[in-house]
Image (spheres, rainbow, N blue to C red):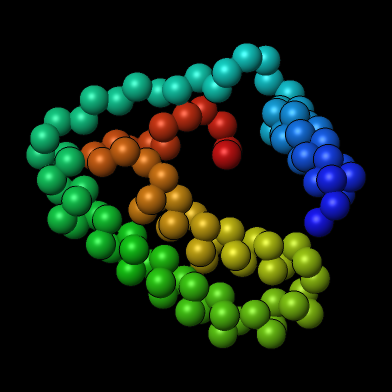
Length: 112
């Protein structure tokens, strides 16, 4: 690769990476407000042994149902596929993997 292409690639990546915070801004000012939760030990144990395995199972079953229903939801338009994916895969996946152990809500304000 010649030096001009390398320089062009570095400049393009630099400007692209600098634009990411602008693209990620959701219109709110400042940093996201984090909810601080301090769940007790029994909540953490119950979440680890009962809730997380059930949520992972729900995510796997939801993924299978989403794949099976995909040919039918395609005819409903792009919104149908997106809504089905959010309801069947993303919602249980976020509950299983995007919250702290024993917490009842996600670790940040907003629908991220």
